Length: 154
Image (cartoon, rainbow, N blue to C red):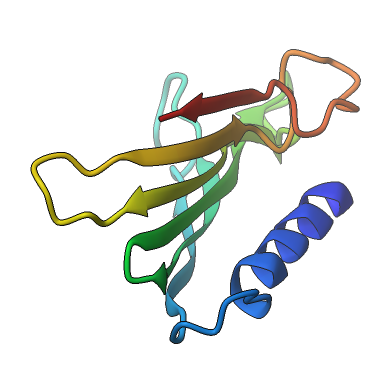
């Protein structure tokens, strides 16, 4: 998680702080949200009903800049991470909560360079990085930012 925070902060500083060409200001938009839901059943219920607690944090942003009359640089960041805990009964009927299980996990960074020719065709170049904060297939939980998918298009 520490590595993800460092990578996120670095990306944000690069996108918003550095401008090699002074052709106007960045158009910036950034949203953060945290959502939590909880459900519970009373002891009068019979059967396998279980309570749950789920939380998800999201961060979405766009950063655009017209660097030259003919070149627009568009960037987007999307982060999401969440976990679910489930309530279980033991053989004595006592309720307890399970360890958190990952329910949402996404890293999606995209950068597009658009050549604004205002013609029939507008060429572009794009780079996209997609990953997860934690690889849930590794039972030790030590794989961070894995798997990675990097796509380049033009």
